[in-house]
Structures are given as C-alpha cells and as structure tokens.
Image (cartoon, rainbow, N blue to C red):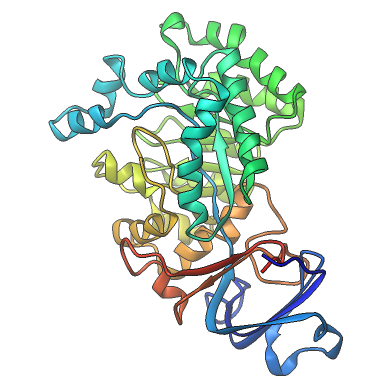
Length: 404
C-alpha cells in the first residue's frame, strides 16, 4: 500500500450509511476525500469543493464503497476445535446436555489453558485473516476460555498482539463470567470472588480490557451475579455488554440496560420489557445467526419488536469453536436476512454503523467527514449484493486510514 497525507477516491458509488431517504445513504457518481487518515468530504463528484481536490487521485472504476466492516462479537482466541460436539448435536444431543457432560465451553477451557501465547496467536491468525479478507477493519475479541487468572490474561494479551501483527483494530472484552469452571462447580459466587473479579481488576491494571461481558443464563450466571460483575466494571470505568436471553429469559437484557450497556447479544428469548429497557438505554441488540443456525434453534430473536422500538441492531459472526464456528461476516449478513427476516439495509447497517456503536466507537461505521478513512471497495454495483450471494467474496480492496 502507498501511504498518503491526502487522497481523493473518485468514480465510485458510496454507501455512506448516513440517515436519509435511501436506507444505505447511496450517492451515485461519488467522490471521497481523505486527509491524514480521516474522511474530510464525501458526496457527488460534481459537488466536490475545490480545496478537497488536491492529493493523489484514485479512480475506483465505478465500484461500490462502504465503510469497512466491523465484527463486533467474536471468541476467536482459543485452542483446539469442537467438531466432535458438532457431530453429537447432529446425533441429537442438546447444548445443555453437552455442557452438563463436561463438553461445551469447558472442553475449550482445558485446551486453552494448555496453550501458550504463541500457540494461541498462531491459531487465531488464520481466523483473523479470513475476516480481514472480507473487508473487516475492526474485530472484537473476548476472553472467557481460561476461567483462571493466568489464562484469561494470556487470552487478552494475545488479542492485543493481533492488532500489532495484522492491519486491524482489536477491541477486547473481558468475559471471565463465561462459565463456572469445574473446580468451582456449584459455587459461582465463590468463583466470582476468588477468580473472576480479581482477574478483571488485574486485566484492567494491565490495560487489556476495553469492555466487560458476561453470560447470563441458567447454565452460567444469574442476573444477581452479573450485577455484581457489572458493579465492578462501573467502579473501573469500563463499559459493559452481555450474552443475554439466548436459551431462556432471565431478564439479562433489562439488567444490561440498567447499567447502560453498549450491547445485549443473542436475544432469542427477549421479551418486550427487555426491548423497551434497551430502547430507553440506547443499548444495541447484537444479532448472532451463526449460533442459532449451528445449534438448530427454533426461537428467533424478536426482530420486528426491536425494529418497532427503534433498537439498533448489529450483526456479527459470534466466531467460536462450539456454537458458531463461522468466520464469514458476509455469511452472517445473509443468515440475518434469510433466517431472521432482517432487511438487506439492516444487515449492512448491522456490520457498519450499529456494529461500531455496539463497541462504543463513534468515528467508524459511516462515510462522513470526521470518520476514520477505513473503507471497503467491492466488485458489485449495489450494497444489496453483499448479503445476496452465499460463499462468495466480492471484495476488491480494503483501504485503511486512507492507505491505498
């Protein structure tokens, strides 16, 4: 790539994701001016101000330009795989049965505890490369497969290293409250007191945490226990998010909203009370069709209710070794539309502007002055094509910080 202080990208169709009559914020015959890694102007070529016409010019050949995509919910740092459990589910075992038999999250915990930083990084990078190849510029990465101090910190350090060795922004989430490890079976509050909360404080002191997450479910942690976690996060000045209402309705989304959560994720069993709480708090709903598909669930998230209450909806891969072994954000967009009846425009907003909001990012996800010049250029004519094809990647080029 060639670095530049100023650049002008011309002859393109812009999907700005700015509000307006068109749901994609489409601008035909568009141009986009960049200076020092930021967008300084985006609009029709005929309206380009003369003071933005300087710098290296790049003709994009009539291609579609969107904000670079954002994968806002992943568990991509882990060791080993769970293909055996995939086969077990195909043979009739449920998510709960696998977890109660010592499989599920705990099988990944054992493998991850045995891996060092270099091993975890080497395993993660092919997954990172797969999403980068689809135009992604930001990836959220969670811990949660350690469930002890050393491994949780190791996972977060690896997540930070990913952003150093690949051209991608990594946002980390501490997910120490992912499951209760075997050594604390039946004693979740003791696990919180002795491991999870002290490890959160240690990770924060090491500047390894951007947000705090938890799994609020009967097989994981109760609303009261997640409330304790979120209270410590608030004390540390860290934003929160939550795996909520995936398998049942415990009221986790409403709890998250009370803490001003950035997002509540999964949400298949969310009710209107939770939706209203999220709407009032400005909490983003992160829709994760990969887990729904892989687990062969039948209860869909209440998309129409979220839409009716104007709750912003993000879409993500939920990339993990068990319930969503998916590394394609384009496929997640397609699934959100085909399985959950999201519109094509909602799906693209879900991996751009709303995904940015789910991570607390205010300078990404749109093509507008002041935003980071992180762009995805596509070999297609309309943004609807991005979620239309299955197993096809139309990316022409990522442009990160105006670097072509």
